[in-house]
Length: 136
Image 1 (cartoon, rainbow, N blue to C red):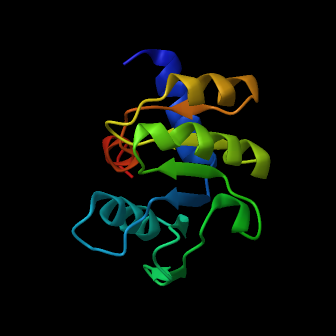
Image 2 (image 1 turned 30 degrees about the vertical axis):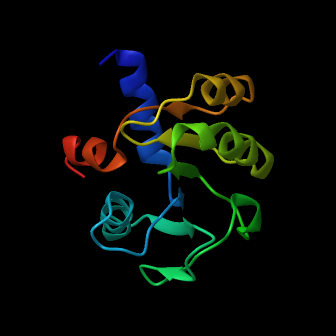
């Protein structure tokens, strides 16, 4: 892994307190649920973003990023790549500080749009694995 990406990941993980998890499932067997639970147990505030559920992990779920009251440090995406550019645009509009696409999710279009807005981006990485790798 290149050192620049390592620095970006380290900075995001250190500075983040609030994580909007887009596509968070209320099903415990889903990767999004596992990752969000891991984040929650490590002191991060998670905000579920899924219009199909009312609550996940004791937190109310929102239909979109725009519906979230208050600031979001990190937008963590568990959606198919074709949906990511729209999510990225919404992240820019709400003033998210950083943007993360989980493993298997890559969108150059979203990356370019976010970079142009000055928002750090991580693609195709698992936030849980990155935290665990750093002993957190």
